[in-house]
Image 1 (cartoon, rainbow, N blue to C red):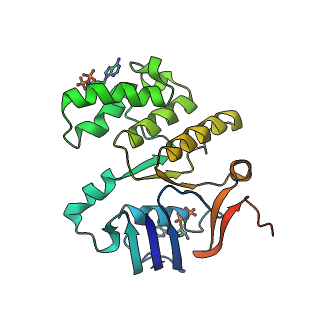
Image 2: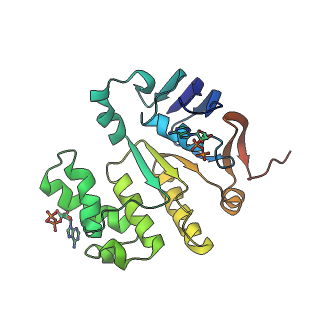
Length: 229
Ligand code: ADP
Ligand code: ADP
């Protein structure tokens, strides 16, 4: 589902490479943590998968897309297949919960009838069935992240990228968000989550891919935040 082959990325202004000769394969339906200290290249890795950044070398494959060579006009099609969730939620503040989720379908031209049927289903799935008409500002952080996950998932993407999705949440709420991501994963979506949170990585015992100064330093089938042998 995701393959990086010998991928490097150097930003023009930087003194060292953000990623250096990274090779990794993530199969369909996997749940993978991407860890490493700040500046190790996690965001660059994720941004490359949706062609927000272009590698300086190597190949990037996502689903059937050869992302590093994808013409600009085909990028929207790629991004429809990849849902993204961020630490800061990125909701439209003037729109209700339902409108935020509906928007993801409107921009790809789905019919109103389809939208009206699908939005309540996905809100139910994330546990926000009763909050469709609230504004983001009326919700807790955990609820706002659920809206963001609903919006990312409503297209039924093949891949869900989550960049520090629990970074602004307390441990209890973080745990609930992880259960939701796990549920989405069990429905068949490949999940790649960048995180700094040892409690979460230790608690979930999933595949761990670790970066350090742009290099892949660990790829463990199941593990915790710290290396254990
Ligand atoms: P992480 O997500 O692990 O914190 P990043 O991918 O954001 O790591 O950053 C990796 C390296 O690339 C860092 O040294 C960072 O300073 C650098 N970097 C990231 N984005 C840019 C950019 N747009 N321009 C120049 N350097 C960048
Ligand atoms: P707009 O004025 O932007 O068209 P609407 O209020 O019509 O916004 O809502 C957009 C979409 O959001 C609707 O088509 C529907 O899918 C969804 N929606 C709005 N309110 C609800 C609700 N209470 N329950 C479920 N879905 C809703």
